[in-house]
Amino acid sequence: MSLTSATSTAAPSLCSVASAAKLGSTVAPLYHAGSTIPKHQTNFIIAQGTASPFTREPQYRHHSTINLARPGGTFPIRRYNGFAEKTSSTPARCFSTTSVSRLRDFFPSQETKYIRQTPAAWQHHDFSEEEMLNVTPAHREPRSWGDWSAWKLIRFCRWGMDLATGLRAEQQSDKSKPTTAIVASKPLTEAQWLVRFVFLESIAGVPGMVAGMLRHLRSLRRMKRDNGWIETLLEESYNERMHLLTFMKMCEPGWFMKTMILGAQGVFFNALFCSYLVSPKICHRFVGYLEEEAVHTYTRCIKEIEQGLLPKWSDPSFQIPELAVQYWHMPEGRRTMRDLILYIRADEAVHRGVNHTLGNLDYKEDPNPFVSDYKAEAKGHKPNAVARGTGYERDEVIG
Ligand SMILES: [Fe+2]
Ligand SMILES: [Fe+2]
Image (cartoon, rainbow, N blue to C red; front, side):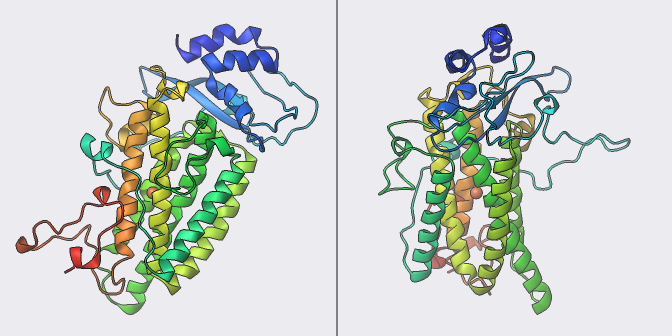
């Protein structure tokens, strides 16, 4: 039974939190997901779509507003299409201010008189299936004071995100191996994953743009060439933005999430801007550690999908956004949520390898090895970022 038809049929009988929860666990797990997040009500609108045979764009027929509520508290569960109701008159911290009736597509493509479509600025470099499956969580041990500082800062950020997204102790993996251990006694829900994805991607898109911009300006004022770093850095931020846009096609955060993202971006952009002027090396190491977290996050999500712990995403009728299909050139028959996360994880593995490597180079003089042609006698020295989680040392790629 498709999610759409199941929910449409069952909708009139939804009249209480208990019945919603019971039904939600079977036909719309994202309704159900809210009960597992303890401290925060993160009202998150999630769209479920079916493809139109004419446009291939998902046509959103109904939407779920999920409440990630405090235990013991009473919070409204909004439903719609004739089955909207409130379970409490207590005004809740509503984290979505978008009218459900208006939620169709968060950013539909702009129709104009003359323009047919606007292609991606950077075409995605395809991965082989083997490359994607071989990505594993990895950790580069800090080797200097700068590495150690970057690592500890990332640990602090991860702690903050776990706290903000209401991750319970039993949902945490082994804290002694935070970027490699993926086993936890309780899975995250689809809603929790989406909250983490959206927040992570909105942050991850910043460093490449800051670093690329500063290197661009440095090249202009010093009147020297950049040796290929700018393009890779800007492409990285573009790629991260595509990750974010992909998840934004699946959900819409409310004002609380948007405020968090706004605040985090304001702080992060400025901090990174100043830090990159002082030490690009430490900043690239910091991003390398951030990407270790991203690979870890997506690896754990893939594992939970494969184990059937995220039933909505492993449902055969679940469709990923068309935007993702086009950007990653996803072949027919390999367009499940697991496939999508495999692509995204491989991207993160590239960022991880690139940034750990750039952190090992002389940022003033060394060319970017990932876009350079190598001499014939240097066969085997051209790096492949997706395959080297800890990055390449300078003598391996520069000589
Ligand atoms: Fe990303
Ligand atoms: Fe990334």
